[in-house]
Image 1 (cartoon, rainbow, N blue to C red):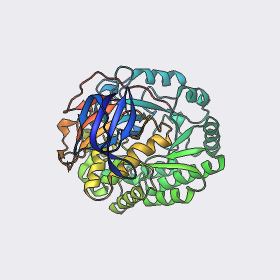
Image 2: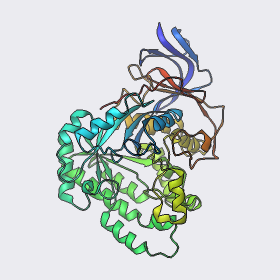
Image 3: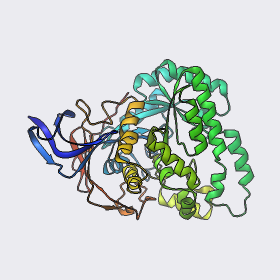
Image 4: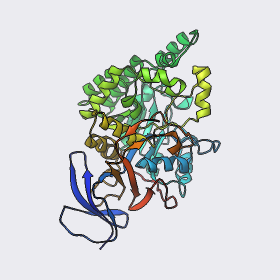
Length: 448
């Protein structure tokens, strides 16, 4: 007898949607039974008419409230948002205090989630010029080592234009069997463009976008891929936002061990939407022209972009509002952790993507590339029983009032999607159902 049986659902994989029944023992999936095979559980969920997905793995998430004021998202608020949105594992970016640049700060951030997180979490380390802790961070279980070629890190952790340090750091990451997360762009081009636009008489969100040009992004990607091909390091390109970047990634696919991501915002919105949103539309990299958005959608559908992420950046409403008067003060980023699944469903409703695309890019591929597979990201025997049950016949109207992040708004507010998340399980236990959280936080630190 199994501890839990989820009966009569339709299981979604990257390849197909097939009927089946899931038997769970302890925290793991013990069997996937075909229709007609009778299995018995101490507890059962009737999933007739439901879609069953693996829990989503969001590979690019910021939680800024570890050591700062509790006004910002912390493990509890952010992980509630994740659970409500079907995300059961997050990979935390290293730039939020305590910045995971040393073993001490890595352990501090790791331990701060114990007893507070509703979902599982992995930690990404930050490395840069003169980094000497890569061996120790790898031993502690860093899921990636993040290099910032331009913005994003502390000043002494930005690689900048130093190609010697870029190659040296990539070799160190290669030698520990790690993956280097690359935030691209050209620091010198950004600096000059920013200086040129600082005196614009009426700056808008488009002004900010002009300082983070498509050329800047492409130059950073070209540098990183060239260095990766030479050093034989595995790299992951963050936040792809343009057709030109896609062309470079295609060219280097056979030369380097290379994966890439796109933010869900860049698949849903374009520069005209950013103009409408004002300060809420300030994001790095910027929302591009509609033709760039279409190219990104095509690349996801074709499997040329490996994963879709949220880049959850939960700036509070009051901080964004300050940017309405002075766009230069608007903190860049959008909330997205709770709405990653909803964003993909919206794209599916629009005919841009499929359920299989969502499971491939938001579940299996992130787990595979960051070496959490087959424990995470899949419905198969032996995997953690991280499961999302979707009701495809119950529409959902996305609203600000339903958001669990301390940033209590979403740029998807008012959007209606054709399905509803009925239940989310983490390692076989329900962590979200009927709009609430029925148990205490049980999330764990996971390592590759």
